[in-house]
Image (cartoon, rainbow, N blue to C red; front, top):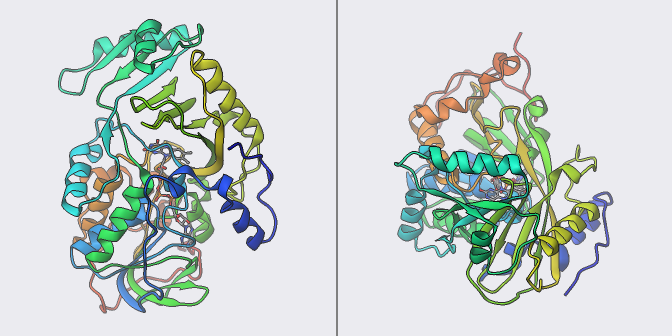
Length: 437
Ligand SMILES: Cc1cc2nc3c(=O)[nH]c(=O)nc-3n(C[C@H](O)[C@H](O)[C@H](O)COP(=O)(O)OP(=O)(O)OC[C@H]3O[C@@H](n4cnc5c(N)ncnc54)[C@H](O)[C@@H]3O)c2cc1C
């Protein structure tokens, strides 16, 4: 089952790169397993719509869903295939924080209403630590935890071993148990939401990389290699690749490389989510004993300026050794897949959401390593703001203009969508904002 890492470089022709990315060993676990059925999407995009959504990850799919559900005409354009980016390559841990945008009840409700089986389940999350300082923080956090949020528990190593079901490395001091932690299959979620968006009237086209966005004052135009689409609004939901369309955002959005692996199935057991020290390493055990793990970001010294997706042998080896050392009493199944991914970081680790320009170009990006809990609620608020011109309090907190050096380019929350109505935008040319004089 073990796949040798054959190519640690992302260079080469786009055809050979594509072949490598889609080779069986480099296909992310979620894209090839777990009952994922490929979606039949539209062959050709519509020519004129209210909103074009660029990017078919969890953000783009959810946004298309809410827009279509409200009766807005929407075209989603995905460069490769739905969930090709971070969404199809992540760990599927769903760890809601205290923000109202991260309410798991909304996810439950949408999954039930749309009849989507995304394996959304409360399996609990155990964050282990080897560090005395971190252990003190865990104990303090548990003591200070308010009563109105799901409880945490500080467990010593023996308590952790009970939950993990195996002896742990003696270096582990203990862990923080969060019984309300959940997991989800990110690809089944995204394809399920995209399927629902189609049912509600959205058009979705895959294999349509957007090359430019432009304004002629009256409307916006998105160009792919084969099509030009007019829209009243465009929303870029392209993770760190957003910078390729709006280079000015390079001062805010940066690509954070990440590596993941998954093993063959092992001894069946209780599914759970895990981490070391809040995310140095994060992993999941699936009911069939498969382990999906990622982390050791700081070991990745490759040049990621081109946002490549190269498998990094150093990080991959560190991940496999970590699992073997930490789960000391377990017989680990062999690694069967290894893949790379990119997250989108911002200087204050908060998303950027909102218009870039009065003519109606929007960005939703910067969800970093925590995109699954907020995706549905965040995009529902974005859809409302696009349709009615009203931004929620939560959206205001993610305004791009909080980065002052860009503020001159960034307009206020614009008016509601009014297809066909002439607009007064000054135009921002091709794939780039023109600084205002
Ligand atoms: C390794 C890793 C592990 C993670 N683990 C977790 C986790 O356990 N829990 C959690 O909550 N979050 C996790 N995250 C974060 C989560 O995956 C992201 O926050 C989320 O998937 C971002 O979704 P997105 O739709 O913004 O981006 P993406 O999923 O990256 O989607 C962007 C899409 O845009 C497309 N695109 C790019 N440019 C263009 C263009 N020009 N034209 C058309 N399409 C384009 C891409 O092909 C891609 O499909 C993890 C992330 C990584 C990388």
